Length: 360
Image 1 (tube, one colour):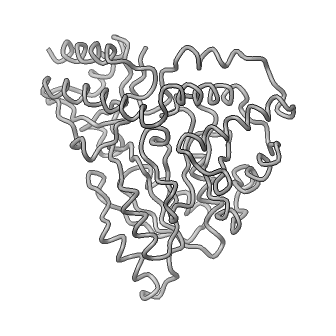
Image 2 (tube, rainbow, N blue to C red):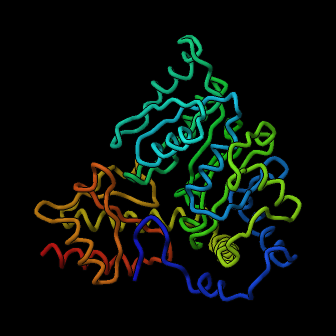
C-alpha cells in the first residue's frame, strides 16, 4: 500500500527496521544519546546555529508541537494576529482561545493567498484602534487544506516593519520546503517527524530561538516548551517519551541527510508532484492551484464530474493507493495527493493508470 495522504507516510525499510532496536529506559544514557542526535540533526537540516536555536522534542502529533509553541512563546502580556487561509490556521486561533491568549483572527478565503496588505495594515493600526500592539504573527507555512504554500519571506518582512515576531506551523513543510532561519523576525517553527522527514507518528518538535524562551509563559504543563528545552539541554526529559518513534526519527534524519537534505527532497517531491499533475490533467482532472502557488508536498485536485470521492478513494485503495479527501466545505469538491514518503515515479505511473481505469 502506498500512502498518498499528508502523513503518516509510507516508510522506507531502514526506518521501519530501526524500530526493532533494543528497548531503552528513557532515564539511561543510551536514550539521551538518541535524543541528542535527533536534536542535533534537526538543526543540521537547515544548517541552524545551535548557539542561537534549539530543537525541542515533544511526544505528540504535530498539533501538539504547534500548541506547545503558541502557548509557551506568547508572553502573558502578548497579543497574536493569526493569518488564516485554511483549517490549520483556524486551529492556531482555536489554540489561542483555549489558553485565553489575546488573539485576533484574519480569516481569509481558503482558495486565496493571504492578503499581505491587509495584514500589514492591521499590524500597523492595532494601537491606533485602541488595542495593544501585536507581539506575534502566527501562520501556517504549507496549508494542507488546499496545498497552498504561504509566503513566509513576505510575512517576515511585515513582522520586521511592525515589530512583531513570527510563529510558524511548518508541520507539513519542514524538511522539504525552504525555511529562512536567518530571518530575525522568526521566533519558532513547529513540525513533526511523520511528514517530510519520513519518520513515524509520535514525536514532534519545535525549533525555537533561544532568546524567545527568555519571556516564555507557563500556561501548559505537559506541553511547556521552555521546561522541555531546559530538560533536554541537560540530557533529561520531563516525561516518558515515545522511544521507538525517536529511533525512527533519528534513522529518518540520517537517511534525509544521506539523500541530499531538504533541497534534494524538494526536488524529488517537485518531480513527483508534477508527474501527478500532468498525468491527471491528461485524464481531465484539474489541479486546484497552479504549481507556482502550491507546495511540492501536497496538491489538491477537483473531483471529476459524475464521480463521487468515495468511488475514487475506494477504487484506488483496492489498487494499493490511499488518497485524501478535501476538508470542510471543500470535501465534496476536492481530493488531495501527497508525494511524501517512500514513493517512486513507478508508483505514480501505476496511480495514474489506476485513475484512468476508474474513470473509464
